Image 1 (cartoon, one colour):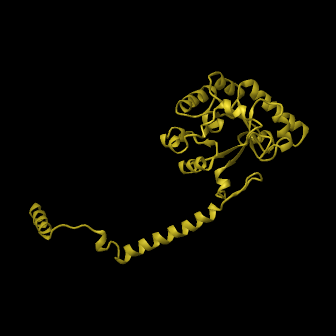
Image 2: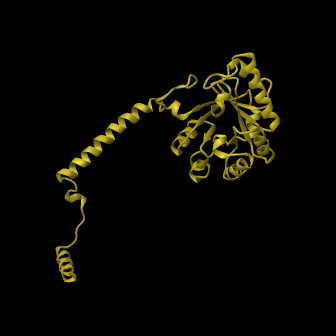
Length: 265
């Protein structure tokens, strides 16, 4: 499958549901690509690693960081240009509308964020759904419209009632990436750590756990401790290193070296 473009994503709205994952390692990126996950949210550093495109050549990649990690509009532009140059397909921006507009005006495809925005959760009451009342549903719609006007092509819509998402999707030109906001979105987005069961803290309601990597990591940690303990024991009782772990030289060389050392004294 060819790597999708922004044009492809917009043209496929309502025709195809895209799968999207947040991945943090090359191993996860490679696994996602082989599994048919089309869209990837990645750490910016991954875009600069040439191995990323070797393992995920056809993935549409969104590098992203929270706005407070980057700075103001000028900082965002300096951050985005090298990423785009090195193969990012779009950038995530939770910054100001002025920043979204500046990115779009400079031909950088930009994805905004509406609904529950974790980095701005204090304004909507913390980690909870946004859009369950008429007033907050109107807020989400106003966020979507503002991103449209600023030039974004997409928006992550997070923890919004699915019926509100569906109504918005019927009326927006944006490509909506749903994280816990229902199939009205045009892509469904989860974090790899939730999918793999690596999250040992609070598991969001929208997350679906497909494997129990936490248990496997715990088992491997016990095996790690056991191996280290055996190594330390071997060192302490003198059984490591054994002859098969050593190199040596001709005894005549050893004798000559010792004599030379004695002469140095």
